Length: 391
Image (cartoon, rainbow, N blue to C red; front, side, top):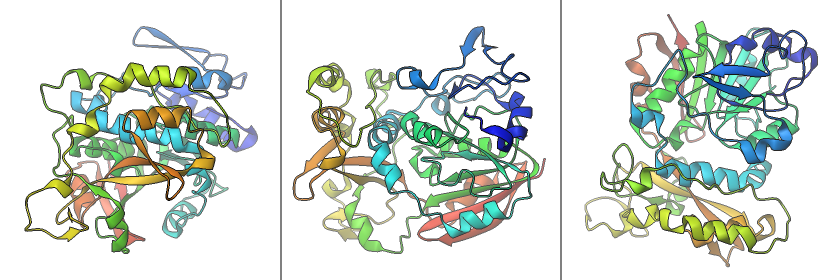
């Protein structure tokens, strides 16, 4: 985690709220805190602070179950392959370009953050490039994201950040005064995982604390955008693969590296990595697209059946001049994680989305016994809710 002067005094005083393992960036010595934080025991193992210079080679998602709040479902603990390949790997690869396009603050999010009492500690789960971190100068912010390259971008700006999973947040119960999850839950591929992410957001705030959640809506204001998405035929089961496909369930050993803005590399080790993992990255071949459906009863756009459709691949166009095509992009192209679009001069990555229908987000939160929905609204093609923790 990155600490910067007086602005983080409260975060330092409450650092005991962090539950490891989690990758901590830029551990700066502090006589009251870091003298006892250099080594932390968790599940019988030593967790050491990772210097920022070593992050690229050591960053891994925080997948271990916390000591005080274990997950009851293995399907929640284990990240489905579709999320690894079409969310995690993709955002790692496009991080610099993605960050350059994410700077405008949504007014409703800004209103929520600016309404918080002075001195509030805000936890941003899925902070991306950190555009909301520090938005309210009277509050303290800690951000986390599953993408190490995006977290590095935040750290370079001096934000307090760490790599962590939205369904397994590394904070003690009641740690923050408020939490936000902006455009994150729609990247989780099962209902159980989406529910777990909401449970975690509520768990980590104090009684009386508020949680703001926003997700993409299936009811898009600009329906022409849907024409650019690739619908999937069905809502897949928990692991998104057939029960017999045991090999594809194993964790992926190779991730796409962050793509620098300009770098001339040979094929080298990138293509070696491609050859090693090509046999395990056939998930897309096993997915039947809705455009191949024989059911002609629904609504179609360019031959795609989209009626009642909520599962999509949404493209991200990485311009050729922003990609070192002979390296990470070549690996992605070779394994079906991306394709070339010479007409647009871009490498096109598919990102998995579950877009939410009207009322779906509230229904996920309605069964909670420790929180209530105090507001709901539709904003710029997003469904949004604000929860208040009651217990």
